[in-house]
Length: 52
Image 1: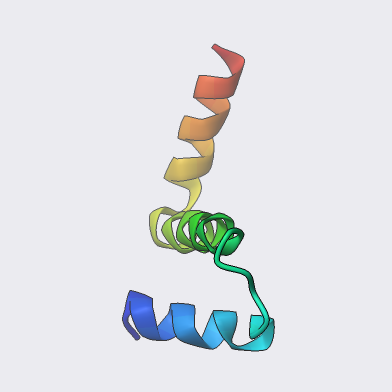
Image 2: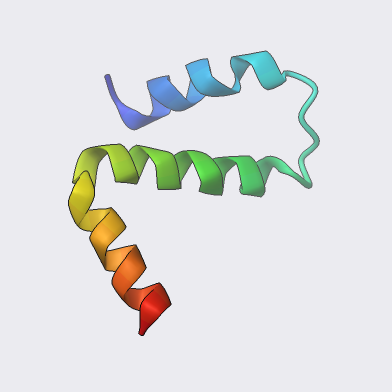
């Protein structure tokens, strides 16, 4: 499935979401989506940056 269809189904339970908090939800979803696609490489990169 595409990014937007996954996002729609992920946001569906959060129907009363305020527009102020929407960017936070989008950012979190984007992070999770990218982490799934990139796998362990993303985790290793994050750890390297945090520990540097």
